[in-house]
Length: 425
Image 1 (cartoon, rainbow, N blue to C red):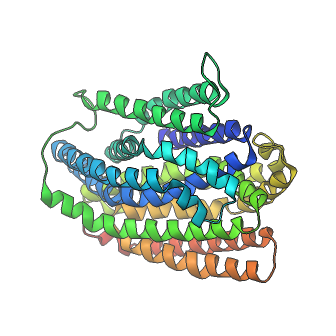
Image 2 (cartoon, rainbow, N blue to C red; image 1 turned 90 degrees about the vertical axis):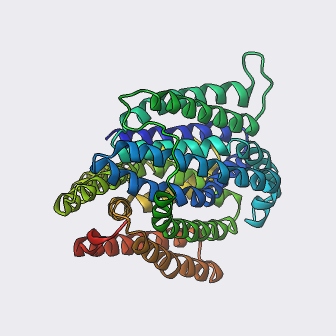
């Protein structure tokens, strides 16, 4: 539950960002929304060390080897810093180009360039924050991350108010203020995590030992997860490009709807993280039956939470969207989106939790195949055909729902076959 609440705070922070940025302009709102898609690409590099690290750390903890897990965390941190330097350079100097190749309108490109250039300067703390949160979750500590995030979100919201609109002696900075607020909040997260890791009772500590053997094991799990995330992220960018081709209002409506839907995602993400940790720890303790049951229990709870939120999305879409924009065209698109995705929350819960359980077991090659084939065969290709045939953006949302349902069924079938329990890490 703390993991679900932490992710809920994550999405509320994003929603507050978009709410305040939406007061600047529709183009600024679309730019911030598109930046989330770019961060999906950046997440590919983080997946190289996060997914494999989670699987291995959870198994070490299950085996009672805290020092080995802590040494692995140190090695992963060094690796994360090196990767972040590369991403910072590319993001800072190529921000406007990234928006342009996505087909965004000139005003969105301008606003996006301003926003993402600043965000790129904080990539190193974003990488470290992601590593430390996932490592502690894999070790079984999700409460600390929740408390840190609550304070961080409050800092971010306050700085948004001060920097975007200009208060307490600051000049109004618009979308740039939102970027600065986000980076400063991440800096707080990392500082808080380091303080926590220095305490003896922490689930993990920082032990400056590099074990190449463990890093190779992380790589064996992580490369297929990163490839899956990479292909999925590129696929989602193509999907966003199809929606962007309909116009700025459609793009902004999709982005607003996606952020609101993220609230429904949170229980799924939270219980997926729980399933990843519990499955990995159970397999480390050589208890396969418990590992299987942990995923089943996590899934059932996620169905209830996400299904309940889905009903709310279906019943009150316009009310939810109206908090972020008053543009009628944007409200109409976002409302249609929320109605359709509200119907797909239970298949999404299945997908989140069971894929998380498989990754916790190290079965990332299975999730790679399912994700790539499903996205291209059942979502991207049909969406492109629908666009070329002149169908409206609502048709794209329907296709997206059908693909989600199919993927959920596939994950349920694979999970219940139990072959993934024998994966070697």
